[in-house]
Figure 1 (spheres, rainbow, N blue to C red):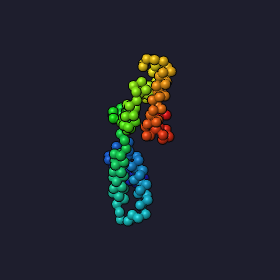
Figure 2 (figure 1 turned 90 degrees about the vertical axis):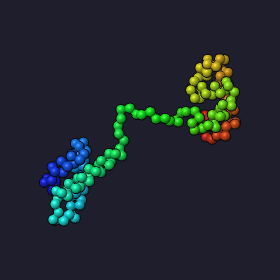
Figure 3 (figure 1 turned 180 degrees about the vertical axis):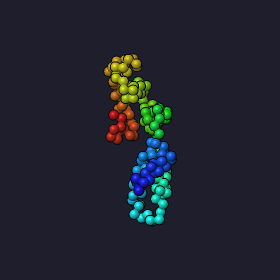
Figure 4 (figure 1 turned 135 degrees about the horizontal axis):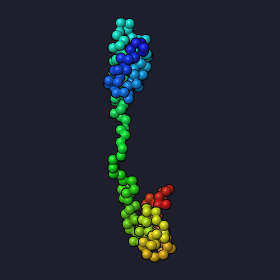
Length: 156
């Protein structure tokens, strides 16, 4: 059966799918045909039967291809709320906003921007110890008043 009808089935697969996917559909066609062959009536037109299976396998490949993501050279810009202050936790930012100015800035620069206390001191004016103290006092106030501060991992 394979030797006699393989060329016809391959032509059908290539016509419906193109060269890239035709080989897979061809082999799937014959795997399905070999499983169903014992139940095939002796009077059946084997070539037409194989072409029907090939057409259905081609449809399966096309449907599967529609579900696969398409590769693109550049990803489109997509808005995200990750890393945007206030996007998910507006209560925290409300509590941070209530801190005195130097504490709020020290917390922001140190914990969000990852700046050292020396860099903060240079921006805010003052000593490194004063910047460290402002950040520590702001963090202490947040831990005391912010409801989620006592959960594991909050305000580290």
